Image (cartoon, rainbow, N blue to C red; front, top):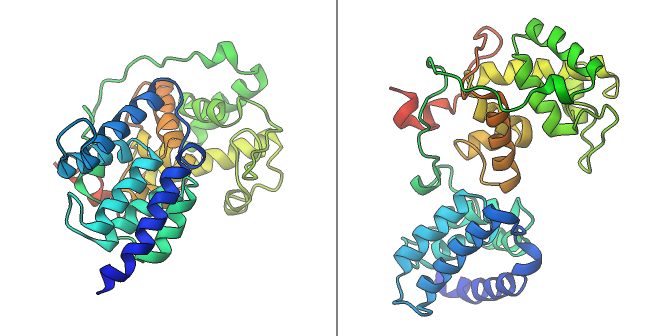
Length: 305
């Protein structure tokens, strides 16, 4: 009975999402955007039997692959399939999980659907888990050469400050410089639309958390950012990908999604940091913070070995 009452609402919201896809979905940019669009179109074809035999199970698999890569429309469409039990076992909790992921990227139809299906499931689907990397954080790993020589591109004053201060916080200067380059491009006066400030783009809550009174002062900002990085390194046991994702999207999002959140911006950010640093593991001080309670749930197939 409940499903029959929800169906008209689901249909209306789905139609609105399809009609608004061009304005609400994450814009397709270059290669990654083209890959996501191709995955989504293939999934739509199998879902509706357009030019191929209808195969909702395969459609759900393709949608989930796109959802993991950050495609908001794929996240929404998969939420729709879970809400209807199409190609997957019907689950309001999993429907809400995917609607929430899409809503966090600004898809308005997904925000409306969350009011219909209720609370997101606490556990994430297996298809949303990142595949195990070739090396795991916290283990010995052969580092690649960093891809960026920041001495050549960073302002000398900033470069000298970071190389002097970072070791005091048990942070490799290359990691700190990579974060600064990605966050502000070495502009100490940078201000984001989300009110992130200064070189390391500290939001007011982070500045208050680490006693930064003037986020536009280079020394104070770097000190606050390094303190936060040191804490994140301990919290995620030196996993550079998780640390970068948490710096960009917040540690809560990393814990909720059991890894790098499915946002194109965050995924690109993490790849940029990993490439710039040249390693997936960083030394950490276990006395700084207790590890995240979610670590045993993040990539358990390789982390617990």
